[in-house]
Length: 170
Image (tube, rainbow, N blue to C red):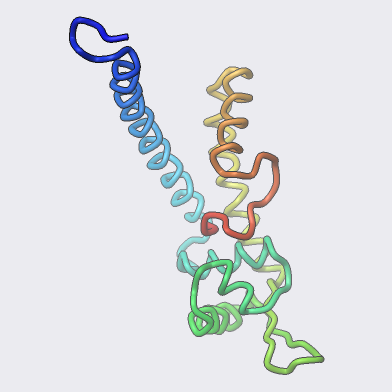
């Protein structure tokens, strides 16, 4: 098992795996920076009309549909008062509609207006165009591998929106 260096073959493999892991992490860091750049650039479609937290709220509501403010707070990992403040700001801009529950007056529901859905669609269209450009630089086999790997890493295993204990929407 051991070589003349006193290391087992398994130890040599571990050293190689650590080197490879370092390179893999560096590649993921570069990918992260690239994707953050895509996200930030896609937010340019807002022309400064919304803050990032306001857009996150709209994106979440666009994904969830009409829902309670407490559900939105939980999804975004924010406090209820923070959601109320953001909702107030977005309602003043005509981007959110508030509602209630007939059976429980303390429940506040939030939904998006057509104008909000247009803003979200514009940001996502810009983002998707940039991502498509990136994908077009890959050959079909690499694209298929990338899709499989990303789904495995994000825990979705399938196409579609990520909800629940997923990364925070942006």
